[in-house]
Image (cartoon, rainbow, N blue to C red):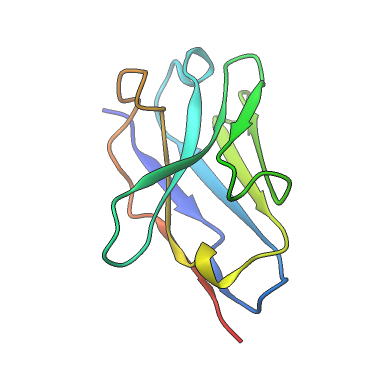
Length: 117
């Protein structure tokens, strides 16, 4: 089974930036659309950004124009550049395929993003 490992989270002030990375261990990475999810305390996990196999991106309204998702198929990596971070972006962030696709890999540990002054 494919293993996904997220990294790059941390503590940042409002208005700051972070770049998250997701490393996939399995094959067929380039054949899957991928996405970044987040789960805040007491909330369900939500999909915030997706990138297709061809690099077409889509975002939820709350992160549009602030977050940028990208992928490197040669390295089996997915990235999330997060700018102008807000308090409400605080969550654990995960990567995996979008719900409309078969699950690509086992859910990883996620990476904690905390936005606080």
